[in-house]
Structures are given as C-alpha cells and as structure tokens.
Image (tube, rainbow, N blue to C red; front, side, top):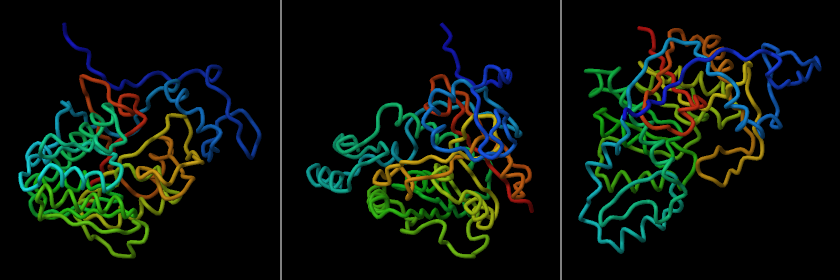
Length: 323
C-alpha cells in the first residue's frame, strides 16, 4: 500500500462566522484589524486554534522531498574510540540536560541526560535536511569558501551540521554558558577544526556589516522582544544568504502574539519570560517593510508527520542578498 505523504495544502479561508472573535484592544470591535499585538491570553489557546485556521502561502515557495535519516556529522563521527565508556558517560551527564539527540561511542547517547523524545529527534533530523541541505544547494561551488554565522546556536547542532557539509568556517554564538560548554565538547568529540563557538547575546553583536556569507537565525525569532532589530541585524551581517526559521502562528492577523510565563531556566527558551511570536502574515509584512525583497519559503514533503512543520506552524524562509 502506498504511504500517504504529509503535505501542506492551502485551504479556503473560513467564513467570519466560524472564526472565534478577537477583541481589538483599541476599538473594542470584533473585526480583525490589519495590525494587532495580541496578548498572552490568546497564546494559551494557540494549540487548539492553530489547527482551526487554514495554511496560507504568501511568498514564492520551494518544495523539497525529505527523507528523515541521521544527520551527516553523527553518522560519520559517532564512534570515537579515544574515549573510555565510563569517562564519556560522566562527561555527557556533567554537561547538563541535552535538548538534542546525539550519538557517541560505546552505544552512549544524550538520552542518558536528555529532555527530548522520538518526535523531537525526527524534528531536528528533518530540520537538517530542510535547512542545511538547502543552503548547500543554494551556495553551490561557493560553499567551500563560505563562512556561516549560527545565531543562538544552542549546543551547536547546526554549526556542526554546516561544518560537516563543507563550509570553510562556521561560528556559533549563544548566550547560555551551558549551551556553549556542550558545543565545545561536541566540537572536540566529533573532531571539527573549521568551526568555533562564542558566548554572546546576538543582539549585542555591534555595528559590523557583511561579516559572514550565510547567517542562520533558526528557532530564535519567536524568543525575542525585538524581532525587527533581530531581522535588521541578520540583513546587515549577511553577504549572500539569510535563513529564518521560526514559529509562525496561523491567525489571520498581521501582528505578533505576546507570549508570557516562559521558563527561562530551560535552555531551549529565550532569556526573558515574555516574547513576541509572529503570525505568518506579520512575518511576511515585516520582511516586506524591511526590504527583504525576493524572500522565498522552503517547505518539505515527507512521508511521516513532523512536529510543528506538518501543521505549518513552523516555517523556513531564505533571502538571497542582492548583488
């Protein structure tokens, strides 16, 4: 029997009578204003509402067929015989909770101190194919001479992924000491020389311009309270490509949702307990107003459902810097 492929399909917009009314704060009306900053009360119900709204596509789109398998640097380097099992186990545990699945010698993985599940594992494998593989394809022959900046790199998963795929140098920055410690361990364990890590807040990178060929802003935009400044920073630093991957809420509004009560002790969260999360329309409008002309969306076609991506709540967009 042929397996069904999970593919996002644009649906008709529901009639206003079927859409839950949202009160506009200023006017106090039930109409959808063109620009609205929603409060966290709406965020509480987003899990139910995201499935209610249709998926919209407002940008040119590149579709990729994705087969979920292990990321290249893990598949190549998982067996490092220089580490004794007991020492390696202690090191993995000492570095704190792991949010990414990684494999090592002696059958050890980050499961021994991990906070992820099977869905999360496939989620990151899918992201590697959707994002890193697409960057490689777009850069072509220029890849070997390219530098990559991985903003909010966490444990360096995508920094390592791009280094393995052949860039000249990849640099990851993250604000959390735990994340950078994990990243440095992985750099040594998987024996990479063409990458580096730095503990730093991405919004404090200064006024440098065109510092890297490719800028990755993955899983970061929806964790900040300064989304416009962050996108301007990406645009300023990139010489050829900017990749934005983010949660995009499906409410038919041009705006950002204020999410509150975030646990900043969790390493995959932002640094503040509140954050502005974009709607899809809000993100597209922001790009257009900031001059990201020609930005496209990359979507995946996969034979199995992938958390957030199958529901089109998480989107990936790429902008090529004009010559």
